[in-house]
Amino acid sequence: MDTTDFRLINWDLAATTAAKLVGAGPVLTPAQIAEVVADLRAKADESVGHVHRITGLEAAADLRDSQVLIVDRPGWAKANTQSFEAMLAPAMEHLAKTRGEKISEATQVLSATATGVEMGAILAFMSSKVLGQYDPFAGLLRDDLPAGGRLMLVAPNIVAIERELKVDVDDFRLWVTLHEQTHRVQFAAAPWLRAHLQSKIAELLASLLAEPEALGERLRAAASDVIRGKKTLDKTADTKGTADDFASGGGLLAGLRTGEQKAILSHITAVMSLLEGHANVVMDAVDSSIVPSVRTIRQRFGSRGKDRSALEKWLRKLLGLDAKMRQYADGQRFVTRAVKLMGMEGFNKVWEGPENLPTEHEVHHPEQWVARMEGAGTAAGTETPHNN
Image (cartoon, rainbow, N blue to C red):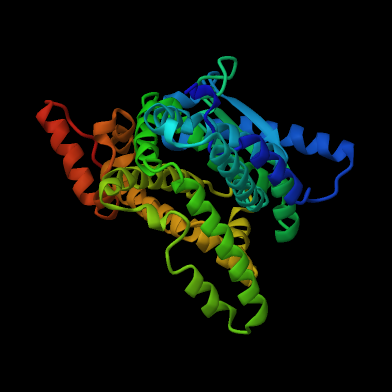
């Protein structure tokens, strides 16, 4: 079988479905759009210096191997279908070589179409919520794209939230870009991290796609649950209980956590908790000298979840977003404690190599990670920076 023709997901259909389903966002004139784009780009540039000062990571001084893009909602969705396709490519190629002959062309077309629509629906929901995203894997798509990835700022969502919260526009945009630029700096500081994560994700995907229909079946089940959940939510007054019942599985990925996948998922979870927790710590280090109204922004932004509709809350649980946020909070506590014990310079050992990454257990017990790092430093005959 020609592996280049083997497809279980129609990525183009996913992108066009997302574009059709998602709203455009706030109405802006061409002049206003141009102003927002230029301002977000300027804020992204300005934030790098602050990230450099807070983290002490010299990698922030030169980020030329990656790029900043200001995108709309369909643009964000399309970019993610491209990244997903690139990440899935090795697993799909392996599947085509090992089991491709057992999957008829008609089955491929049916699966690719159905799964593409369902993936598009999920991306449509996500694209209306995300403010920014650093994609370290964009260089896998084409040779002409920067090897260091791309930072995407979703302009209509940023404008929508700053209007909803009635916060200072300049302050809010800088606050958002500080978080996203931190991720860009992390991967610049740890150039090995991109390949390390890619290999772990590829290993996980190969396991998840051991049965060709697995991914499509899970997405179709999720889509069916969305429909059933919406009907139930529309009919019952006790929406909180219903949402919790339907989301009791812990999100779309909950059923994937089987024996052979646990170790890989645990490692990926720990790494993502570290990255998001570190970015949150950087944001918390931002004071009024950088963002004058930062306390107001934090308070209003943190209260947004209380106003979400019952259906949106349920969808977030279905997609695992609530669990993801809890992981990020765990990561923030880990980084905060580690920095308190070691100082930022000592903590920055985490970017030196994969052996210094925390395990999921260590994320919940940062003192054990600190002890391991200090033990490694002593064994190597070096002194580990320590600041109580």
